[in-house]
Image 1 (cartoon, rainbow, N blue to C red):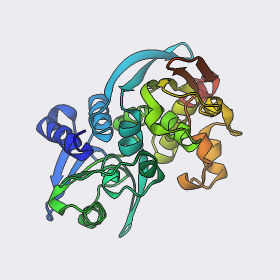
Image 2 (image 1 turned 90 degrees about the horizontal axis):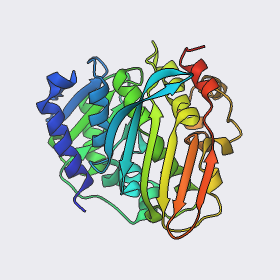
Image 3 (image 1 turned 45 degrees about the vertical axis):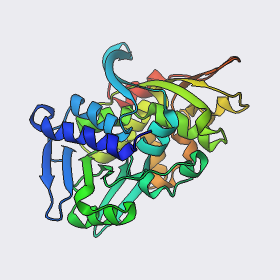
Length: 311
């Protein structure tokens, strides 16, 4: 398979070419790194969020919108489908790079992580990327600085001129879209954490509602996680049976039924202090090739409606 970062940078080039149409801004830093503002100072939008999701998954997923319902009201949904869930979701899309550089704080996702390959997923898959480019999507309320780009370049082993940092705020249209697109990644990550071989995941299709954009990043963190834990649907096809498929859905966690605003408040709004099992999709079906079908979890529209301001 071609380098994840090589495939992602081709999509970044597309974003740069159509920056006006996507309502994004492009900034080349003095050290040659490129920051693409997908929704910090720029407006961004649904199309920007869809393309950003393709970038985050290294071009290995099909991403599209549809219309569903929450509490009998129309709601945009994001659907993501891939035949390479381990690579697209775990090696690329997962938000696993905490950025804290000279006062800048952000959370990195995307294929640049595979150039460092220090997280457990890479050992499980036996994969490490090699590329002269590093594409790291950054979730932050500010745009990355030259120091951030140099930090990424140093850890990824690429020149600063090869660093591309598409960046978005949680409280943005782009943020709501690209975070709703994480339902499949959460299922793949949860299953991997439970001990399932990521390479035995054959295909995943997932959807979740796009949360309304609130005034603050904290409120957006709560709403976008509610959208996944209480509104996401995932269909997986896998190669091997497993006795813990029922633990993939958010219903398996002790916190199920509690809005994320309360969960975050209980943990001081520290993302890294939350129990890992809260990050899971609501409703999951698993087809086992040559075997049976497992179903776990359920949608909770009452919590979604309250979180989204519909009640």
